[in-house]
Length: 91
Image 1 (cartoon, rainbow, N blue to C red):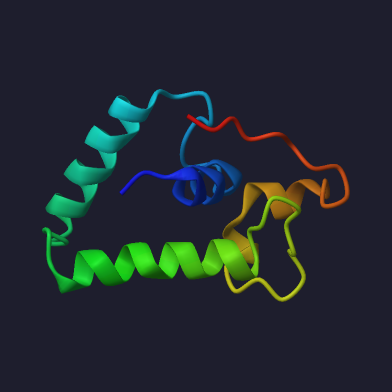
Image 2: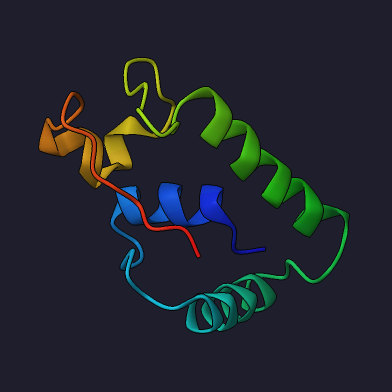
């Protein structure tokens, strides 16, 4: 579930620390999704597919914040750094 897209989106939203290790993030996401009823199911798979789609359309390596449907919730968009891309480490 945790991939480069997930890490990029949620770190820009300010929900996770982009430096947090993969295993810790994986455990957190599985717990939160399980608590919300998103077990390994069609809903869980759809949730991840939507993350991937959002990352490809808006939260790209060089983000396209204009028109982003979650811009109002995004710490990165509010920061005004749209032209000064932060580096996201891949694992």
